[in-house]
Image: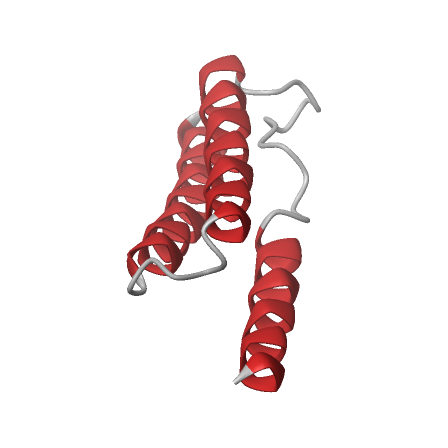
Length: 91
């Protein structure tokens, strides 16, 4: 049981690191989209707070915290795509 939990924790950490390793959203001139960048920071902060809650509860949250983290990964990807769309549509 402990080995399975440790393996699951390591896998989640790897996925999280990859998801939040992307640079902050920026426009083509190298300037950040300030509102999207702020949303991205808040999403990262939320992900880290969920991880802390999981650790405090010994990962026993019936999968709901993990699902929330999956949704935050989707948020991060959508924010990146929003910035790319804004860059593409900028004239």
